[in-house]
Length: 504
Image (cartoon, rainbow, N blue to C red; front, side):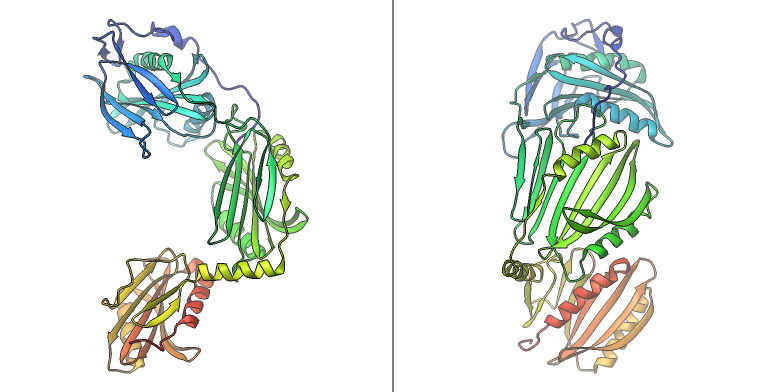
């Protein structure tokens, strides 16, 4: 997400000569860096993804971090006789130039309450073909004062970073000189990989077009049918394009309890609780020819204010969510940039037959079938098995958020009412309150349901018990009270699917 044009920051070029060191010339053996006197005039070359750099041989490699694909190194940690750690590597930090990132860093530090950082200072470094900037500060904690410095270098979406922490604040000038040494040696070894032409995205539900300045981050899950596309600035060169504007289009299958109005209500109720959210409003507005449910608010993160508006509507058996973020430093400019993209969006229609086909495939994916000790059931796919189903065990658990489920069975000779009273007593011992017992019939199955609220957590428990072939089956559901209605739907679907005809 990013923004429009403004000056890049206060650049202190006087710093480039204040320590007797300038870019393009390395320190000699008489130079001191952070308390270190170079004893060598020799330099070692190191290769990273898209970059190479040189470092005085007084520094040794403490650790080298290899890429997972075996293509080389992504990070190095160095030490010297007096410097505890110098880290240098490639890192994706936020689709922007180094000087923009440093400006954001600077403003974020200054916006913090009870800020432990003092003497915060930035500089932009003159490196041919590379955008380079650094930020330095002094941190104050229980151990006293310590220096902290970061160097960032960028070329069209490729980023490199160096950092040093824990040095004496009076050695800042020497650290700055070391950073200039490193920066002056950096070479870009990659190839520019940002798009240069108009771009497009198309799937079977929608399509859009955008300029080369945008980064398209897309996700598609063929099993669930979800499609998600987010657009944000590829390489922000000013703070008005940092983190916004952005556009998110998300399409997912509409669940039975999932509709545009409910989704918007839930977001509205959730967002208005936060102290960093203001001007939260719930309304209706047209988009792409549909009457959408909308939620809008101002989101403040650090020093950055974004105006967020999200549209919800149902179509093709799906819930469409369109969310835009406007940078309030240039809100009208952000809105205009996103409108140029929104005007290209085409929502595709699919046939009723195709809608039904997709719905059935989604239901099969969403409620997969399981068998445990001969009993079969369907359970929502967001819940995952703790371990493989094993009939040699008398218990199995499913986790993945609310509701969690534990299934257990035991040989039992008593009646169901006594089993329910025993479970009631157990929950009471686990600090549950408002306990109750009731009989529940689902199809031909009759259960005793024991439920209660946990005193220590914002949770509930619902235990369903049934006796089948001399065995007591217990289905324990751990529920979040905030999502009870949705969880209850999942529980009901589970109970409706339970088939004990082949149970032990």
